[in-house]
Image (cartoon, rainbow, N blue to C red; front, side):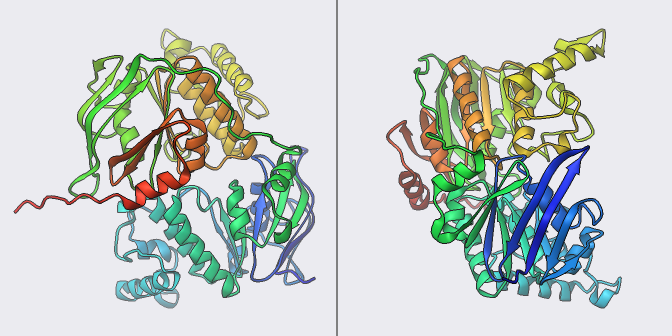
Length: 511
């Protein structure tokens, strides 16, 4: 069989430790090929070899394009050969327009440094129309939602009409309707002959979208499945090396009755246009209760958490333990016992110029400092405790966080917020981009925190996660609560119906 792109006995080591071992991997033209595996399985390393980040000479084995060996010395060489990559983390230039982001580095005509913005906008509009992406080419990227920015990145990769398109967790920032729109684009690309590698932790996406799947575990390709052999049990068993009987752990204890968090008629102004992104939301959460917040991207879920955490201004009243709070900053929220795990772990979470232990303790230095100086031995002890309790897989407490898997990075941020022993935890997409085993660990941790009396508000784009994990769910649409249900009363269908049938607000126009 002739593959568009393949690897033969590919191996890669870091400090003598194998990250990839004898990986044989092949892509058939015009197919969507899933690449799955838990965090640390070798997916990112394989992609970095294929895209020239790890250049020829730094790995063993061979890469072949149309049957001929290629040796990329840089990502630019891989792109020139027709291999495009869309990373999971959003990478756009906020100060530029959509059109400028689509053709960044190639805005001039025929290599000229002079830019014709009329021509640039025409090219961008044509590309967006062909991909059926509803964006204005002239719009500044700073005004776009996370979903829209993800679509800009995908369109940018497709601008060069690549032979192979690598998508790393492309739906991680998307809700159901945006995911459906993206899948429509990918299906059209496949029909036109584009070959794709689709990296995902969401098994239903593999089942619905992909033609073949390769499973990596501990740096080895342990399974290659054709579509007719797909099943959730087969894929998960290959990923973890055993069957998982239950994804969502069962809660044995009930939450308390005393009210911890209360929101009374909270509204949050829209950051870029007139009107409110959160409208007159009132809810309560009790001690040890897990409250899920469902809704599509843009419904106001993240903005609601950001208001409770003091990041966004709001109207209305937010109270903890019956005491109204004056939240002017996250520092005010932390003093009130509120902690937040951000959706964007790289943009507003991890500090890549610090090691693991500093990332755990930053913002919580009061308990490990003496006379204004950090006690490094105390800092290391705290980091080791969290490495053990959260099962963080890292070479040491001083490891570079940039080289850790997404799941382990997420656990580091969890350790940071837990260090303050909060009363209320706000979790924004806590399992975004993490593998099935790490998801189970995070679910167990959420239940343990609830059993300790911590109140949790959980935002997730995966409805099944909220239904399976939370004591109660509220559904937001256009910034307002449109439904609420207790454990056992809700379903994915109920949430979808609530969000799709909600009547959008009519904004008042001031003459």
